[in-house]
Length: 212
Ligand code: 1Q0
Image 1 (cartoon, protein in one colour):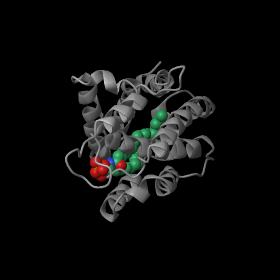
Image 2: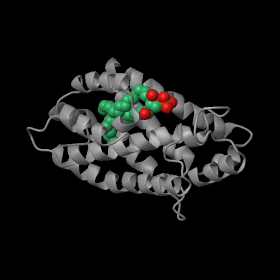
Image 3: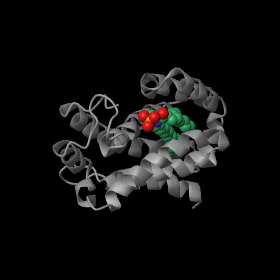
Image 4: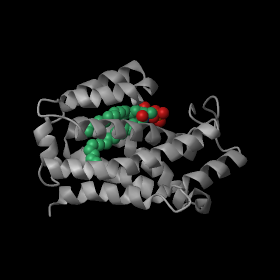
């Protein structure tokens, strides 16, 4: 089994591990899932490094909270939200004394997870003549783009053009033939969607979806 197969399955495994029986999301596994995706993105080439750098810095911010003195409050996304809100540790309307709160940092990854879900669903149901760049940018326009300024949208557009074609993409995932990759995606997607939805509901309930 190749390293790439392992990664795709590891993404699946980490997102599976991130949910406990009370439907709480473990920050540790959530960021481990992102770490796997960064590894994957780096294997696609340097054009993507401005994207992976941003993800890495956000993973780092959350890791620092988790290993810091208030780490026990950062075990789940639920406990993090409660702790930061109760202790006024979140800039709610404009950036001020808490520009890098756990809540706002995780929100950026959360929005990106929606992109991932939409993209992987397109990939899963794609046909031979589907283009990865089109799937990626459609998914992007429906999700993350709404939160990005013009300059970033342009840069992202350039990066999408550098994506390998569908066949190569399936190969890079290297989880067997197309049918096997499709099956694995079918298995991962409901998990990713569930983690996304739980976080979305939590953020909506606490009015945190537009954090600066
Ligand atoms: C495979 C190609 C990757 C395409 C990625 C599409 C999303 C592009 C987003 C790029 C934005 C990066 C520049 C930084 C933006 C920040 O300003 C922004 C806001 O943060 P802040 O602190 O300024 O308020 N940051 C973000 O919005 C976070 C963006 C994270 C993008 C994460 C992309 C994750 C890609 C993962 C590779 C998945 C490959 C698919 C195969 C997976 C197989 C299971």
